[in-house]
Image (cartoon, rainbow, N blue to C red; front, side, top):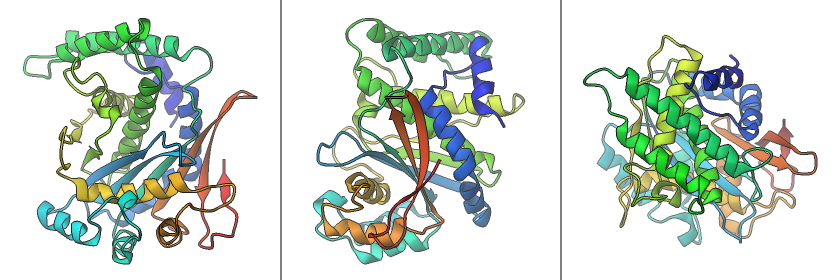
Amino acid sequence: MIFPGALKANIDSNKGFALYPYFEAFYETFQKSSRQTLIDFFSKHEHIEQWAVFTDYAFYDKNKHSDVVVYSFIPAPTNFSRTSERLDILSFKDIKHLKKVNQSFIKEISENPILNIAIVFERERKLSFGDERLALAATFDAFRRMVEIWISESLPGERDYSSLLDDIQIIERCLLGKGGNLKLLRDIYMIATITAYLVFEAKNTGKVKKIGWFSDRDTFLSYKKKDLSFPLLLSLIEAMHHVFVVSHDAKRKSDPFIFGIPESNGAVWYDSFLRIPDLICATLADHDKKKNKFSHPKFIPIMEELISSNDKFITLGIRYLKKEPRFEAVRYTYERELDRPLEEQS
């Protein structure tokens, strides 16, 4: 399966997205080092057909060493309220408010069928070489043309993409003018691509019938909220997931993407589930990879008992090597003893 080439070909026919060098590096490393881990996990739990992916982020904290996004694939609870209450008992706060993590909460995550995929970004990251603003402007131009085709080919009763087209045109004007937040748009595009791809790979195992994505509240979701009809991040994920599906199999139809949208204020209705990726995000963001140390001892049990030597855990790093220049992705593996060095697989 050659995704990047297939999608590039679709760009020419106005039916695809640009895949930037960072994603090509990520894709190649995921295929070589991590895809089989994902397949094995869902094959082992093939009796579970419905899943939820809870996502948390740790970005731009000056006191941390890395920016991290974590995807926790969890069986969709048959009794949401009861499961939520149990998680609340095990961990009633985000890790930043805790002096010590409940050992039972770590055990709960470790012993249950939960697959965690973490992506570690360096603070100085890029989508591609050259002018990123112009590259993104070209990307959204292709996105707009693709949606125009969807509108022209849609049948009565199918989804109306008119509001999405309006949203894209707003983003285009921002990129070509002075109102666009390039750093935030870059991150939104990167997260959207990776999210859509990971959900596609999970469903492509043939073991997953339904899967929903539930994000923590973040600026990625609220960007231009007053101007857009729907969060840009969610629109991109849905569209990219569709393109991944049809690029893999032109005859296959993409199922509607299921989103959990957090409230604007107050507690998020699935907040207790978000504490799983929150725990991992905070740990990996705090981890000093060079010295293999943490700023607080509360992170050590999470690293040693949950992340290290765990076949239900995938950690990938994406790096931009400015001097060469080129993009590189690696899979990090962690030993249980913190004084041992980290291993990397390109």
